[in-house]
Amino acid sequence: MNWKLLSVKKNKKWIWTVVNKSYPGILAWVLGDRSAKTFGKLWKIIKCWRSYFYVTDGYPVYPCFIDDGDRIVKKTYMTRVEGENTRVRHYLARLHRQTLCYSKSEEMLRLSIKLLLHYLHDGFVTL
Image (cartoon, helix red, strand yellow):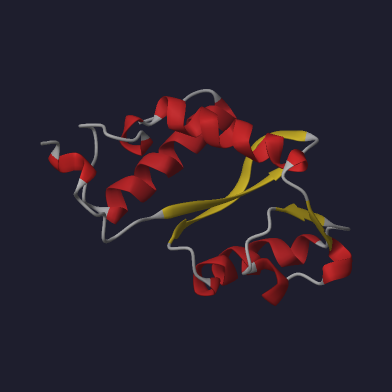
């Protein structure tokens, strides 16, 4: 019997990311659950950018923050986001499914993501 299939992850974490189709990389991100409270933290960062429109998937949290006239809901336009998510998963083994490289510490996950994004943006990390 495979116990992995029976186990339930109680403390799931999600990485909410913001990308721009014209610029490579992730512009902003927040780590947390899938609630409006977590998206609210990310919204505080990006609302001051005064974008003309936002492309999202159909997750029900977005209409609470983004007006319908400023939002396009299309999965096909999300390829840029999915590409960046794939790149982050490629470099961080702790984000793979069924991996041994994980940590129970949210702080370590947050610092690993921060370090990786700094490296991908600047090309080096100084110690």
